[in-house]
Image 1 (cartoon, rainbow, N blue to C red):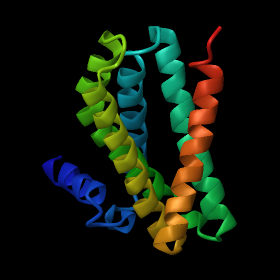
Image 2 (spheres, rainbow, N blue to C red):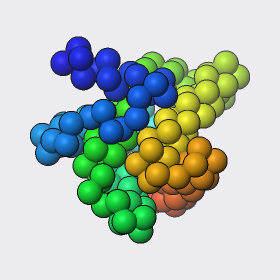
Image 3 (cartoon, helix red, strand yellow):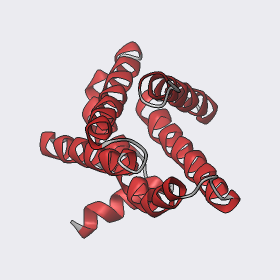
Length: 168
C-alpha cells in the first residue's frame, strides 16, 4: 500500500504520468471508491449527509464520463482505466490533505483569507495534476492539457453550482 501511495504522490507532484499505474480493474475500483469516499467526506463539511453522498457520486461520474469521452474522441479509449485510476487516486490523496482546510472554512463565517488562499492553492494544484494526467493520457501538449483540465473544472463547478450549491 505504501508503494501505491508513493506512486500517487509522484503523479501528484508531476514526476510520473498515469502510464506507471498497472492496467488493473481492481485498482480502478479502489481509486473510484477512494474518490467517492473522500468526496463524500469533503462535501459533508458543507452539505447535509445525503446530499454529500450524492454530490460525491456525481463528481465521480463526471470524472469517469468526461475522461472516457475525451479518450474516446482521441482514439485512446484503452487508456481509460489507467487515466481514471490516476485521476481518482490523485483527487483522493489531495482531498485528504485538503480536508482540515475544508473543515476550517466550513466553521468560519466569513472564510478567513489564509483559508481562502490555501483553498485556491489546492484548486490550482488539482488543475495542474489533472492537466498533467490528461496531457499524458490524451497525447497532447502541456498547453492543451491545461485547457482540457480547465474545461473539466468548469463543467464540474457548473454542475455543482447548479445542483448542490445554488442559492434558494
